[in-house]
Amino acid sequence: MKRVIVDYKKLNPKILSLLAQTYPDGFDDEELIRFQNSSGEVYYCAELRTADVVYLVKVNRNLDQTIKQFLSEDEDDNFEREIDDLESVED
Image (cartoon, rainbow, N blue to C red; front, side, top):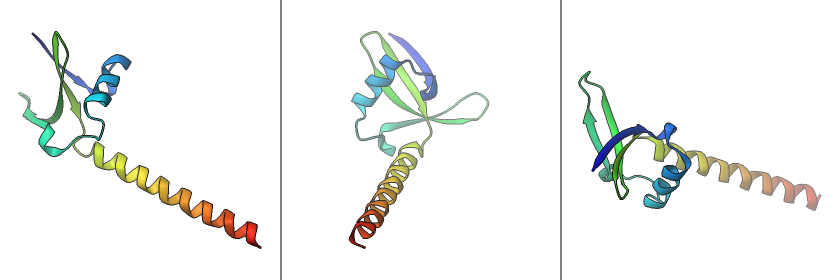
């Protein structure tokens, strides 16, 4: 079986879709594999298996949290805009 290490930014649409299906709720720390290369750099990867390839997809460990925070802030902004819209209608 072939093993490939790839950065999530360089995934093709097919593998990216499979990654989203495999981890629909994002990544937990327990699901990430930590490894250190020969230069001493530490990487975190999510394992993704296909019929003939095992991908270790390099991800930023805080990527999931960053996305959740961004989405939460966006929801808060939308909520505040909706309140402002309602107040302007009532006046």
